[in-house]
Image (cartoon, rainbow, N blue to C red; front, side, top):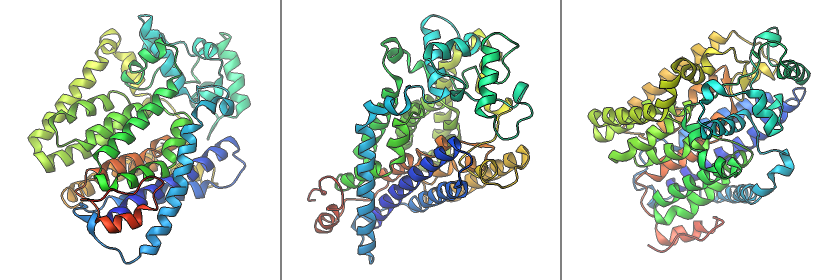
Length: 452
Protein backbone atom coordinates (compact mmCIF):
# COMPACT_ATOMS: atom_id res chain seq x y z
CA UNK A 1 0.00 0.00 0.00
CA UNK A 2 1.41 3.34 -1.04
CA UNK A 3 -0.21 4.93 2.02
CA UNK A 4 1.71 2.63 4.38
CA UNK A 5 4.91 3.33 2.45
CA UNK A 6 4.42 7.07 3.00
CA UNK A 7 3.81 6.64 6.71
CA UNK A 8 6.74 4.25 7.13
CA UNK A 9 9.07 6.62 5.25
CA UNK A 10 8.23 9.42 7.66
CA UNK A 11 8.81 7.15 10.66
CA UNK A 12 12.16 6.07 9.21
CA UNK A 13 13.14 9.73 8.75
CA UNK A 14 12.24 10.37 12.39
CA UNK A 15 14.34 7.40 13.47
CA UNK A 16 17.24 8.73 11.42
CA UNK A 17 16.87 12.13 13.06
CA UNK A 18 16.87 10.42 16.44
CA UNK A 19 20.28 8.83 15.88
CA UNK A 20 21.65 11.94 14.16
CA UNK A 21 20.53 14.06 17.12
CA UNK A 22 22.20 11.78 19.65
CA UNK A 23 25.46 11.86 17.69
CA UNK A 24 25.16 15.63 17.32
CA UNK A 25 24.83 16.01 21.09
CA UNK A 26 27.83 13.74 21.74
CA UNK A 27 30.05 15.69 19.35
CA UNK A 28 28.99 19.05 20.81
CA UNK A 29 29.91 17.78 24.27
CA UNK A 30 33.15 16.18 23.05
CA UNK A 31 34.37 18.12 19.97
CA UNK A 32 37.37 15.84 19.57
CA UNK A 33 35.15 12.92 18.56
CA UNK A 34 34.44 12.23 14.86
CA UNK A 35 31.04 11.88 13.25
CA UNK A 36 30.01 15.37 12.06
CA UNK A 37 29.67 14.25 8.41
CA UNK A 38 27.37 11.42 9.53
CA UNK A 39 25.15 13.93 11.34
CA UNK A 40 24.92 16.25 8.32
CA UNK A 41 24.22 13.36 5.94
CA UNK A 42 21.67 11.92 8.38
CA UNK A 43 19.73 15.17 8.73
CA UNK A 44 19.89 15.83 4.99
CA UNK A 45 18.76 12.29 4.14
CA UNK A 46 15.86 12.57 6.60
CA UNK A 47 14.68 15.78 4.95
CA UNK A 48 14.94 14.14 1.53
CA UNK A 49 12.96 11.11 2.71
CA UNK A 50 10.25 13.38 4.12
CA UNK A 51 10.01 15.26 0.83
CA UNK A 52 9.63 11.90 -0.93
CA UNK A 53 6.88 10.88 1.51
CA UNK A 54 4.85 14.04 0.82
CA UNK A 55 4.93 13.88 -2.98
CA UNK A 56 1.59 13.44 -4.71
CA UNK A 57 -1.97 13.84 -3.45
CA UNK A 58 -2.36 10.40 -1.86
CA UNK A 59 -5.84 9.90 -3.26
CA UNK A 60 -7.11 6.35 -2.71
CA UNK A 61 -3.67 4.98 -1.83
CA UNK A 62 -4.89 2.97 1.14
CA UNK A 63 -6.49 0.49 -1.29
CA UNK A 64 -3.59 0.11 -3.71
CA UNK A 65 -1.29 -2.91 -3.77
CA UNK A 66 2.48 -3.24 -3.57
CA UNK A 67 4.90 -5.68 -5.19
CA UNK A 68 7.43 -5.45 -2.39
CA UNK A 69 5.37 -6.64 0.53
CA UNK A 70 8.40 -8.20 2.20
CA UNK A 71 10.28 -4.89 2.17
CA UNK A 72 7.26 -3.07 3.60
CA UNK A 73 6.97 -5.68 6.36
CA UNK A 74 10.65 -5.39 7.28
CA UNK A 75 10.38 -1.62 7.35
CA UNK A 76 7.41 -1.75 9.68
CA UNK A 77 9.22 -4.23 11.95
CA UNK A 78 11.94 -1.60 12.40
CA UNK A 79 9.35 1.14 12.89
CA UNK A 80 7.70 -0.95 15.60
CA UNK A 81 11.02 -1.40 17.40
CA UNK A 82 11.63 2.34 17.25
CA UNK A 83 8.06 2.84 18.47
CA UNK A 84 9.03 1.07 21.67
CA UNK A 85 11.98 3.46 21.95
CA UNK A 86 9.58 6.39 21.60
CA UNK A 87 7.31 4.98 24.30
CA UNK A 88 10.28 4.48 26.64
CA UNK A 89 11.14 8.18 26.39
CA UNK A 90 7.64 9.21 27.40
CA UNK A 91 7.52 6.73 30.27
CA UNK A 92 10.96 7.88 31.41
CA UNK A 93 9.94 11.55 31.60
CA UNK A 94 9.79 11.63 35.45
CA UNK A 95 13.37 10.36 35.61
CA UNK A 96 14.90 12.97 33.32
CA UNK A 97 16.19 15.04 36.23
CA UNK A 98 18.48 12.19 37.20
CA UNK A 99 20.10 12.43 33.76
CA UNK A 100 20.41 16.20 33.59
CA UNK A 101 20.03 17.25 37.25
CA UNK A 102 17.98 20.30 36.22
CA UNK A 103 14.81 20.86 34.16
CA UNK A 104 16.42 23.91 32.50
CA UNK A 105 18.09 22.04 29.66
CA UNK A 106 18.79 25.16 27.55
CA UNK A 107 18.47 28.92 27.66
CA UNK A 108 15.13 28.91 25.82
CA UNK A 109 13.51 26.99 28.68
CA UNK A 110 15.33 28.96 31.36
CA UNK A 111 14.81 32.47 29.98
CA UNK A 112 11.18 31.82 29.08
CA UNK A 113 10.42 30.75 32.64
CA UNK A 114 12.19 33.81 34.08
CA UNK A 115 10.33 36.00 31.58
CA UNK A 116 7.02 34.51 32.71
CA UNK A 117 7.89 35.25 36.33
CA UNK A 118 8.62 38.87 35.45
CA UNK A 119 5.25 39.20 33.70
CA UNK A 120 3.53 37.75 36.78
CA UNK A 121 5.19 40.50 38.81
CA UNK A 122 4.07 43.18 36.32
CA UNK A 123 7.38 43.76 34.56
CA UNK A 124 8.55 43.68 30.96
CA UNK A 125 11.06 40.86 30.36
CA UNK A 126 12.35 42.48 27.16
CA UNK A 127 13.73 45.33 29.29
CA UNK A 128 14.01 43.97 32.85
CA UNK A 129 15.30 40.41 32.64
CA UNK A 130 18.52 39.98 34.64
CA UNK A 131 20.36 36.98 33.22
CA UNK A 132 22.56 36.43 36.27
CA UNK A 133 19.73 36.76 38.81
CA UNK A 134 17.63 34.42 36.69
CA UNK A 135 20.34 31.77 36.44
CA UNK A 136 21.32 32.08 40.09
CA UNK A 137 17.74 31.38 41.14
CA UNK A 138 17.59 28.39 38.76
CA UNK A 139 21.03 27.17 39.92
CA UNK A 140 22.45 26.89 36.40
CA UNK A 141 25.45 28.46 34.71
CA UNK A 142 26.97 29.62 31.41
CA UNK A 143 26.75 26.19 29.76
CA UNK A 144 23.00 26.89 29.39
CA UNK A 145 23.49 30.24 27.63
CA UNK A 146 24.01 31.49 24.08
CA UNK A 147 27.43 33.21 23.85
CA UNK A 148 28.12 36.05 21.40
CA UNK A 149 31.19 36.83 19.30
CA UNK A 150 32.19 40.01 21.08
CA UNK A 151 33.77 41.23 24.30
CA UNK A 152 35.90 38.49 25.83
CA UNK A 153 34.83 36.11 23.05
CA UNK A 154 35.67 38.47 20.17
CA UNK A 155 38.70 36.44 19.08
CA UNK A 156 36.99 33.05 19.18
CA UNK A 157 36.13 31.66 15.76
CA UNK A 158 33.91 28.65 16.35
CA UNK A 159 32.81 28.59 20.00
CA UNK A 160 34.36 29.63 23.32
CA UNK A 161 35.70 26.88 25.54
CA UNK A 162 33.96 25.94 28.77
CA UNK A 163 36.75 27.62 30.72
CA UNK A 164 36.39 30.86 28.73
CA UNK A 165 32.65 30.88 29.36
CA UNK A 166 33.13 30.22 33.08
CA UNK A 167 35.70 33.01 33.37
CA UNK A 168 33.49 35.50 31.52
CA UNK A 169 30.49 34.48 33.61
CA UNK A 170 32.38 34.97 36.87
CA UNK A 171 33.48 38.45 35.82
CA UNK A 172 30.12 39.70 34.57
CA UNK A 173 28.04 38.13 37.33
CA UNK A 174 30.24 39.86 39.90
CA UNK A 175 29.68 43.26 38.27
CA UNK A 176 33.03 43.54 36.51
CA UNK A 177 32.31 45.26 33.19
CA UNK A 178 29.12 45.03 31.14
CA UNK A 179 27.66 41.77 29.90
CA UNK A 180 28.10 41.74 26.13
CA UNK A 181 29.06 38.09 25.88
CA UNK A 182 25.77 36.34 26.70
CA UNK A 183 22.28 36.72 25.25
CA UNK A 184 20.09 37.95 28.09
CA UNK A 185 16.94 39.32 26.47
CA UNK A 186 14.06 36.98 25.49
CA UNK A 187 14.60 36.33 21.78
CA UNK A 188 11.12 35.04 20.90
CA UNK A 189 7.67 36.62 20.51
CA UNK A 190 5.65 37.05 23.69
CA UNK A 191 3.53 33.89 23.59
CA UNK A 192 6.70 31.88 24.14
CA UNK A 193 6.49 32.93 27.79
CA UNK A 194 2.87 34.09 28.14
CA UNK A 195 1.69 30.52 27.49
CA UNK A 196 3.74 29.53 30.54
CA UNK A 197 2.07 31.88 33.02
CA UNK A 198 -0.37 29.39 34.63
CA UNK A 199 2.26 26.63 34.74
CA UNK A 200 4.90 28.89 36.30
CA UNK A 201 2.37 30.38 38.72
CA UNK A 202 1.55 26.87 39.97
CA UNK A 203 5.23 25.94 40.27
CA UNK A 204 5.01 23.11 37.71
CA UNK A 205 8.01 22.03 35.64
CA UNK A 206 7.39 23.61 32.22
CA UNK A 207 8.84 20.54 30.48
CA UNK A 208 5.61 18.71 31.31
CA UNK A 209 3.71 21.36 29.34
CA UNK A 210 5.96 20.81 26.33
CA UNK A 211 5.43 17.04 26.46
CA UNK A 212 1.67 17.59 26.84
CA UNK A 213 1.73 19.75 23.70
CA UNK A 214 3.47 16.94 21.80
CA UNK A 215 0.93 14.36 22.96
CA UNK A 216 -1.93 16.69 22.02
CA UNK A 217 -0.45 17.25 18.54
CA UNK A 218 0.00 13.49 18.08
CA UNK A 219 -3.60 12.88 19.15
CA UNK A 220 -4.88 15.44 16.62
CA UNK A 221 -2.90 13.82 13.81
CA UNK A 222 -4.33 10.40 14.68
CA UNK A 223 -7.84 11.83 14.96
CA UNK A 224 -7.59 13.38 11.48
CA UNK A 225 -6.15 10.20 9.91
CA UNK A 226 -8.42 7.60 8.22
CA UNK A 227 -9.75 5.22 10.90
CA UNK A 228 -8.24 2.13 9.29
CA UNK A 229 -4.78 3.69 9.26
CA UNK A 230 -4.76 5.12 12.76
CA UNK A 231 -2.74 2.28 14.32
CA UNK A 232 -0.07 2.86 11.68
CA UNK A 233 -0.05 6.61 12.31
CA UNK A 234 0.30 6.05 16.05
CA UNK A 235 3.12 3.57 15.57
CA UNK A 236 4.85 5.94 13.15
CA UNK A 237 4.54 8.89 15.52
CA UNK A 238 6.25 6.85 18.22
CA UNK A 239 8.68 5.24 15.77
CA UNK A 240 9.83 8.70 14.72
CA UNK A 241 11.69 8.68 18.02
CA UNK A 242 13.19 12.13 17.52
CA UNK A 243 9.79 13.55 18.49
CA UNK A 244 9.58 12.06 21.96
CA UNK A 245 13.30 11.89 22.73
CA UNK A 246 14.13 15.53 22.11
CA UNK A 247 10.88 16.84 23.55
CA UNK A 248 11.40 14.92 26.78
CA UNK A 249 15.08 15.87 26.61
CA UNK A 250 14.05 19.53 26.76
CA UNK A 251 12.47 21.64 24.04
CA UNK A 252 10.12 24.59 24.09
CA UNK A 253 9.43 24.23 20.36
CA UNK A 254 6.20 22.33 20.98
CA UNK A 255 4.54 25.61 21.99
CA UNK A 256 4.61 26.72 18.34
CA UNK A 257 4.36 23.23 16.84
CA UNK A 258 0.97 22.38 18.35
CA UNK A 259 -0.94 25.37 16.90
CA UNK A 260 1.01 25.02 13.65
CA UNK A 261 -0.13 21.39 13.32
CA UNK A 262 -3.73 22.51 13.89
CA UNK A 263 -3.43 25.29 11.31
CA UNK A 264 -1.87 23.02 8.69
CA UNK A 265 -4.30 20.10 9.12
CA UNK A 266 -7.41 22.28 9.08
CA UNK A 267 -6.24 24.99 6.70
CA UNK A 268 -9.42 24.43 4.66
CA UNK A 269 -11.36 26.00 7.55
CA UNK A 270 -11.71 29.73 8.01
CA UNK A 271 -10.69 29.53 11.67
CA UNK A 272 -7.27 27.99 10.81
CA UNK A 273 -5.85 31.52 10.75
CA UNK A 274 -6.23 31.66 14.54
CA UNK A 275 -3.82 28.82 15.38
CA UNK A 276 -1.49 30.09 12.66
CA UNK A 277 -1.43 33.45 14.43
CA UNK A 278 -0.71 31.74 17.75
CA UNK A 279 2.19 29.83 16.18
CA UNK A 280 3.87 32.89 14.66
CA UNK A 281 3.36 34.79 17.92
CA UNK A 282 5.27 32.06 19.76
CA UNK A 283 8.47 31.41 17.82
CA UNK A 284 10.13 32.78 14.70
CA UNK A 285 10.63 29.38 13.08
CA UNK A 286 6.86 29.31 12.50
CA UNK A 287 7.33 32.32 10.22
CA UNK A 288 9.05 30.06 7.70
CA UNK A 289 5.80 28.15 7.23
CA UNK A 290 3.71 31.21 6.40
CA UNK A 291 4.41 31.42 2.62
CA UNK A 292 3.75 27.69 2.20
CA UNK A 293 0.54 27.94 4.20
CA UNK A 294 -0.53 30.85 1.97
CA UNK A 295 0.25 28.89 -1.19
CA UNK A 296 -1.67 25.85 0.05
CA UNK A 297 -4.69 27.90 1.13
CA UNK A 298 -4.68 29.84 -2.14
CA UNK A 299 -4.71 26.56 -4.08
CA UNK A 300 -7.69 25.30 -2.08
CA UNK A 301 -9.74 28.40 -1.23
CA UNK A 302 -8.30 31.15 -3.40
CA UNK A 303 -5.97 34.09 -2.85
CA UNK A 304 -8.62 36.18 -1.15
CA UNK A 305 -9.02 33.53 1.55
CA UNK A 306 -5.24 33.25 1.88
CA UNK A 307 -4.89 37.02 2.29
CA UNK A 308 -7.69 37.04 4.84
CA UNK A 309 -5.99 34.29 6.85
CA UNK A 310 -2.67 36.11 6.84
CA UNK A 311 -4.30 39.35 8.00
CA UNK A 312 -6.01 37.55 10.88
CA UNK A 313 -2.80 35.76 11.84
CA UNK A 314 -0.87 39.04 11.76
CA UNK A 315 -3.56 40.65 13.90
CA UNK A 316 -3.20 37.92 16.52
CA UNK A 317 0.58 38.35 16.46
CA UNK A 318 0.28 42.10 17.04
CA UNK A 319 -2.37 41.71 19.75
CA UNK A 320 -0.24 39.17 21.67
CA UNK A 321 2.83 41.41 21.54
CA UNK A 322 1.06 44.77 21.85
CA UNK A 323 1.78 45.40 25.57
CA UNK A 324 5.52 44.99 25.01
CA UNK A 325 5.52 46.93 21.74
CA UNK A 326 3.80 49.84 23.46
CA UNK A 327 6.01 49.73 26.55
CA UNK A 328 9.38 49.68 24.76
CA UNK A 329 9.26 49.01 21.01
CA UNK A 330 13.04 49.16 20.57
CA UNK A 331 13.68 46.48 23.20
CA UNK A 332 10.94 44.28 21.78
CA UNK A 333 12.38 44.53 18.26
CA UNK A 334 15.89 43.81 19.53
CA UNK A 335 14.57 40.72 21.29
CA UNK A 336 12.89 39.31 18.21
CA UNK A 337 15.79 40.20 15.94
CA UNK A 338 18.44 38.70 18.22
CA UNK A 339 19.29 35.86 15.79
CA UNK A 340 19.88 38.42 13.03
CA UNK A 341 21.44 41.44 14.75
CA UNK A 342 23.61 39.75 17.37
CA UNK A 343 27.01 38.25 16.41
CA UNK A 344 26.15 34.59 16.92
CA UNK A 345 28.69 31.79 16.74
CA UNK A 346 28.21 29.23 13.96
CA UNK A 347 26.35 26.26 15.37
CA UNK A 348 24.10 23.47 14.24
CA UNK A 349 23.50 20.07 12.70
CA UNK A 350 23.21 21.29 9.11
CA UNK A 351 25.88 22.15 6.57
CA UNK A 352 27.72 24.37 9.08
CA UNK A 353 28.50 21.32 11.24
CA UNK A 354 31.05 20.18 8.65
CA UNK A 355 33.04 23.35 9.39
CA UNK A 356 32.54 23.71 13.13
CA UNK A 357 33.21 20.05 13.97
CA UNK A 358 33.99 18.24 10.72
CA UNK A 359 37.28 19.77 9.65
CA UNK A 360 35.97 21.62 6.60
CA UNK A 361 36.97 25.30 6.22
CA UNK A 362 34.59 27.81 7.79
CA UNK A 363 33.29 30.19 5.13
CA UNK A 364 32.16 33.79 5.81
CA UNK A 365 28.68 34.00 7.30
CA UNK A 366 27.40 35.80 4.19
CA UNK A 367 27.99 32.63 2.15
CA UNK A 368 25.66 30.64 4.37
CA UNK A 369 23.11 33.47 4.28
CA UNK A 370 23.17 33.40 0.46
CA UNK A 371 22.75 29.62 0.45
CA UNK A 372 19.84 29.91 2.88
CA UNK A 373 18.10 32.60 0.82
CA UNK A 374 18.65 30.63 -2.39
CA UNK A 375 17.21 27.49 -0.79
CA UNK A 376 14.23 29.51 0.46
CA UNK A 377 13.53 30.93 -2.99
CA UNK A 378 13.86 27.52 -4.63
CA UNK A 379 11.62 25.89 -2.03
CA UNK A 380 8.88 28.46 -2.54
CA UNK A 381 9.08 27.99 -6.31
CA UNK A 382 8.80 24.22 -5.92
CA UNK A 383 5.86 24.58 -3.52
CA UNK A 384 4.12 26.93 -5.95
CA UNK A 385 4.63 24.69 -8.96
CA UNK A 386 3.49 21.62 -7.00
CA UNK A 387 0.63 23.36 -5.20
CA UNK A 388 -1.96 21.06 -6.83
CA UNK A 389 0.04 17.92 -7.55
CA UNK A 390 1.83 17.78 -4.15
CA UNK A 391 -0.03 20.23 -1.90
CA UNK A 392 1.57 19.02 1.36
CA UNK A 393 5.23 19.54 0.44
CA UNK A 394 5.36 22.87 2.25
CA UNK A 395 5.22 21.11 5.63
CA UNK A 396 8.84 20.04 5.07
CA UNK A 397 10.16 22.54 2.52
CA UNK A 398 9.58 25.34 5.07
CA UNK A 399 12.52 24.19 7.17
CA UNK A 400 14.83 23.10 4.34
CA UNK A 401 16.57 26.53 4.01
CA UNK A 402 17.69 26.33 7.64
CA UNK A 403 19.84 23.31 6.76
CA UNK A 404 22.20 25.76 5.02
CA UNK A 405 22.11 28.50 7.69
CA UNK A 406 24.95 29.86 9.82
CA UNK A 407 22.96 28.54 12.78
CA UNK A 408 21.13 25.35 11.88
CA UNK A 409 20.34 24.00 15.33
CA UNK A 410 19.10 20.43 15.54
CA UNK A 411 15.96 21.74 17.25
CA UNK A 412 14.90 23.15 13.86
CA UNK A 413 14.58 19.66 12.38
CA UNK A 414 13.53 17.10 14.98
CA UNK A 415 9.81 17.98 14.73
CA UNK A 416 9.62 17.57 10.95
CA UNK A 417 8.15 14.02 11.17
CA UNK A 418 5.26 15.38 13.24
CA UNK A 419 4.48 18.02 10.63
CA UNK A 420 4.89 15.50 7.81
CA UNK A 421 2.48 13.03 9.42
CA UNK A 422 0.05 15.90 10.02
CA UNK A 423 0.25 16.66 6.30
CA UNK A 424 -0.29 13.01 5.31
CA UNK A 425 -3.23 12.69 7.71
CA UNK A 426 -5.20 15.21 5.64
CA UNK A 427 -4.54 13.41 2.35
CA UNK A 428 -7.54 11.59 0.82
CA UNK A 429 -5.90 8.20 1.40
CA UNK A 430 -9.12 6.29 2.05
CA UNK A 431 -9.35 3.26 4.34
CA UNK A 432 -7.41 0.08 3.55
CA UNK A 433 -9.10 -3.07 2.25
CA UNK A 434 -9.99 -5.15 5.30
CA UNK A 435 -8.12 -8.38 4.60
CA UNK A 436 -4.90 -6.68 3.45
CA UNK A 437 -5.05 -4.25 6.36
CA UNK A 438 -5.27 -7.10 8.85
CA UNK A 439 -2.22 -8.81 7.37
CA UNK A 440 -0.14 -5.65 7.47
CA UNK A 441 -1.72 -4.43 10.70
CA UNK A 442 0.07 -7.14 12.64
CA UNK A 443 3.20 -5.06 12.21
CA UNK A 444 1.91 -2.21 14.30
CA UNK A 445 2.49 -2.29 18.04
CA UNK A 446 -1.19 -1.58 18.53
CA UNK A 447 -4.44 -3.07 17.30
CA UNK A 448 -4.83 -3.83 13.62
CA UNK A 449 -7.19 -1.62 11.63
CA UNK A 450 -10.86 -2.44 12.13
CA UNK A 451 -12.95 -4.07 9.43
CA UNK A 452 -14.43 -1.64 6.92
